[in-house]
Length: 142
Image 1 (tube, rainbow, N blue to C red):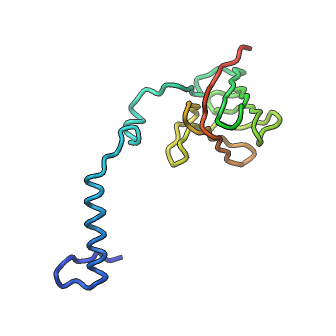
Image 2: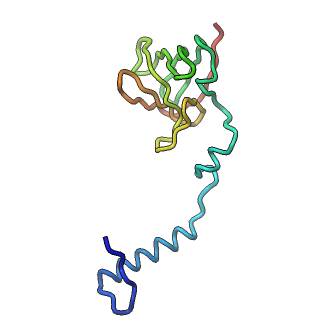
């Protein structure tokens, strides 16, 4: 793709592309980005309102309530976030899975994390499953 030369002698198509480029540049320069939406802010802040599966103990059990379902999760291997999970339409019985982490549905993922307000992403039997946003996390007594 060639870059249009924005001159008085530009063709009609070049003029349109120049106008779009100028509009995009002015929008980028004047569009504020909320701090929570910036990756640098997320990676630098201390994460609250959730847990890291890799920091839990083996056989620790959680109850995770999402907008649509409640899941019971038992940690099998904390460093790899391997768990047994039951609940929702995908897990009517306990099933082995790996917690990928917490996301907002885009490319950002807080690895091995489960956080209120974020979707829970996991892998089970080669399938990627994303829950609705987490509403509550409870550590169950053994």
